Image (cartoon, helix red, strand yellow):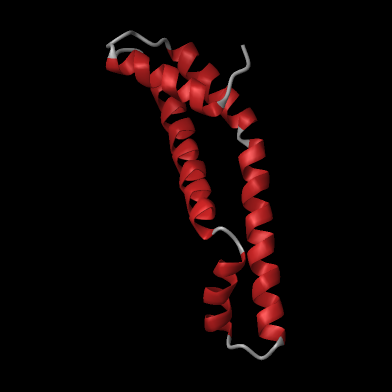
Amino acid sequence: MTETIDSIIQELQRRVLNNEPISPASWVNAALMINILAERLDNEMAEFEAMLMEAEAELVSKDVPVSKAKILARKSVDYRVYLKLKAKINRIQEYIMLAKRRAIIQDL
């Protein structure tokens, strides 16, 4: 079965909701897999940010004020998708940090 970030997190959510014990090793393993799989998301974010920067630079080169160029550049990409991706990456980073902390706590 091919694992995805969402499927790993959903499995852990299911286990937490059902009060099933999760070993420290399972937490670390899940964090490791998610970290490896997150590379694609990081690349997508880099692509979005590059597109935003290029659009902004093009507008500034046409003498559009920088503050206005930043706002207008957002129209050049699907900004809603960008924000959702950014939020997902932040949740993943927080999850990995918490999973590592949970792995060192023996009794919880």
